[in-house]
Amino acid sequence: MPALALDLAAADQDKGAVIFDRKCSTCHDVTGQTVSGPPLNGVVGRKTASVEGFPYSDAMRGLDGAWTPELLDAYLVKPRRMLPGTAMSFGGLKKDEDRRDLIGWLATLKP
Image (cartoon, rainbow, N blue to C red; front, top):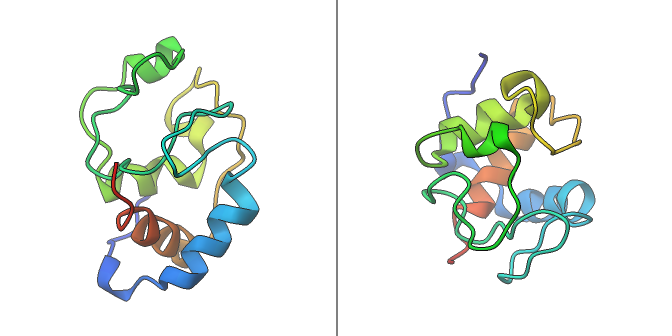
């Protein structure tokens, strides 16, 4: 699976926030609230499928480990290709820089 060698120090935080607003905020929140997807504040480093009470797909529950920047990067290229059976219908972020900026911004958000 392709993954960007992430240099989160090079991430543009402002662009990451804009990408979240445009591409992710319809389904995800960053204040701890569940929308149609789990909240993403604190996602970087969080155990996969671990938000209490969220009805994860079997595919997502079968993904073991934590959401490292590298795993998020690989997932966000095209979620359904990396994790067949995921309920996330998002088509993915094709540009390496967009994923880096988004993940860099998400990494600043506390649980």
